[in-house]
Length: 137
Image (cartoon, rainbow, N blue to C red; front, side, top):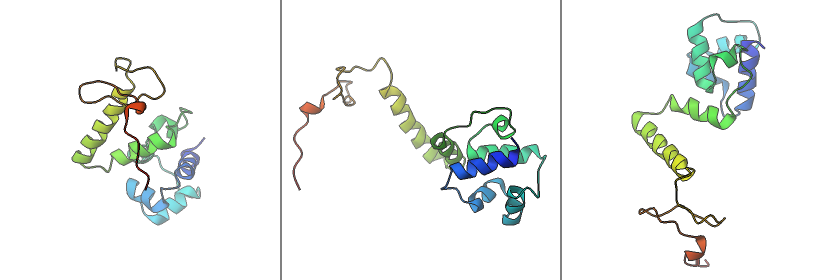
């Protein structure tokens, strides 16, 4: 598969990413993007291929056909978004991600039932049946 084919697939898999966004991400204009996607232009600039891989959150090997495993669309969106975040937002995203890892860790105390919810600040776990009833509106 060619670089152009991979880029076309990745753009199709990411409908929220417009061609203009892609162009800005790799610092190329509308005409360059149009010609590239039409097969009228190609590139052998490794720096550009690296930029394309970062925009989509995939490896250079995937873009060049050396690997058949792209990131799933959600992971690709996260990786691509990382590039445009400022330091505070990156820190916030990392703290949110670490809570998911902690929640899924085998050392977390749980009651073992389907109604488990995350524990309180002291590490105790409560069940949903302990929660007060919700008011009707």
